[in-house]
Image (spheres, one colour):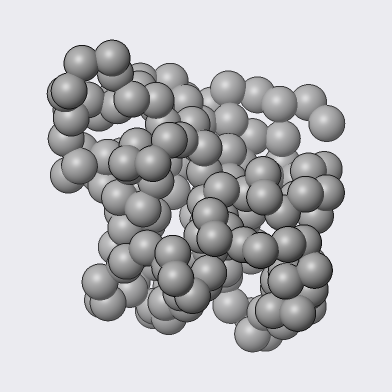
Length: 158
């Protein structure tokens, strides 16, 4: 699959990162029935902060938090759903199957007529399940200084 760079820039603060998420959603993701969004970045790079910014355009009123200890948080909004995965503590690929994640990612468990964004942190731990799937990918890079600035790249092979 051919990967294209859709956006490259930077954010100056967590709020800026959330705002960028909303803008990128409206420009590239809105109107799709199912979106796979793979998030790359070190611990503390702002992956969950970016996912938090997707809540507003989806009409989600809940606070979006990292699902680190339970692997998945689901949020339901007026315009769609956000399924936020954090695979950092995943024990094995077999655990993915036990939790029906491949079924979710294929769309077979999606509510009928509902737009869903699958935001997956630490997606590389899913092994081959996500490797060749059409997806958008966000890359958040920490600066070498102790700044809140983040370099951001947004790609698609979808």
